[in-house]
Image 1: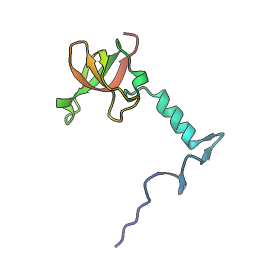
Image 2 (image 1 turned 120 degrees about the vertical axis):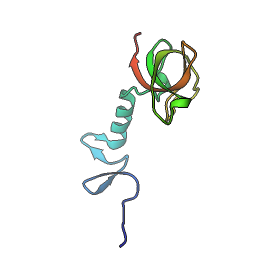
Image 3 (image 1 turned 180 degrees about the vertical axis):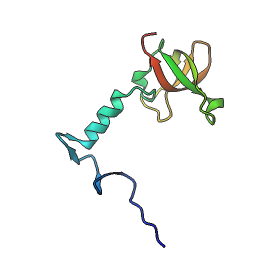
Length: 106
């Protein structure tokens, strides 16, 4: 028995959605862009600033996913985006990637 699957991508109603597919007055690409920029999950450097209260994943905790809470002292990732989270140093000296932003006015 042969199992067939769709090529990678997003589908709606059996039709592949691409950046030119219109949903209402917005294209799918624009909606995705707005959604990604409205969520602050620690992957965009612009969302992470010194003084913020965040949860990070330390290198030793990558397998377990344990989170460490702290206040950002320094941003160590120089690029504007990182898929696994922006690397930061906390005020207590621990280094890890931002998993969640808890408060931005700490």
